[in-house]
Amino acid sequence: MSQPKLAMCNFIPDVDELKKMALAHGFCGVDWTFKPKDLPTNSLDESRLLKRISRLHPLEVRYHCALKGIDLGDADMAKADAAMEIYRRICRMASRLDGRFITVHLGLGGRPSDELSWERSVEALSELVEYADGLGICICLENLASGWSSRPELFEKLIRKSKAAVTLDIGHARVSPSVQSRHYDFEDFVSPHHERVFNAHIYHEEWENGHVPPEELDDVKDRLCLLSTLPCDWWVLELREKAALLSTLRVVRQFMDTFPEDRPIELLGMM
Image (cartoon, rainbow, N blue to C red; front, side):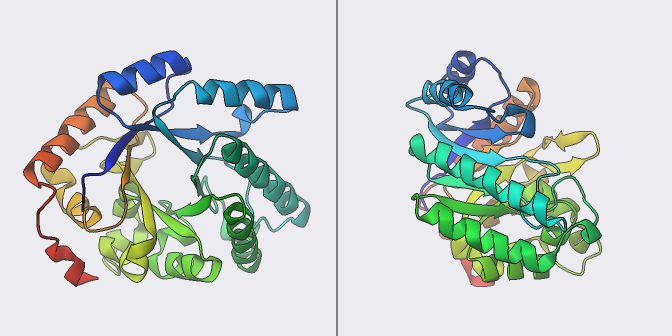
């Protein structure tokens, strides 16, 4: 497999400064996160937002929906319908910018399972996948640190039943209760659908105070080795503070220098 494209998050509000930093440090792209407060409320705001994002060219841009409290499978039908319209709107915006990948979540923010409907989540995610596909966009479901998508056996069902692709968050996988209890291993998030993993979020682990960068290559080496066997060509260094981002970049570049493009991919045999 060829070396992946490295991307950074849009944590710098000024897009010109964001682009300048990305290019200065050799990033190939930006993973643009939509949060509820950032969503445009009218067509003029939407046009302004799309113009801002377009200024990142020639960097590749993929999209990430961090919409806490906005769930496709909300137990409240009215809220679920409103969530679907928001996600469809984001798909249309991304399509106007020739976007090809959007990462979504189910139960972001640790919502209790009784506030969500499993059946509605699967049905709505399937519907969104089909809608986005009609716009030339691939919907990728991210594994979270808690909830249904933190459990490899349920994550597999969500992917299989909805036909979504995968954004593999290696920090969430590390702190998954299923992995911490050793009922499952990290690779169990990958093995049933390794051909569907198109994006990865790279950092060491997530705790209440946020994402923790790796201190050294050994912190993430095994997970990066597994990632390197996948068709995933988009590695987002998901740190939103400059020093942590650049220290993680050094670790990832050390890995990429150690494991050249023509290395054999023995790890495929484990899946």
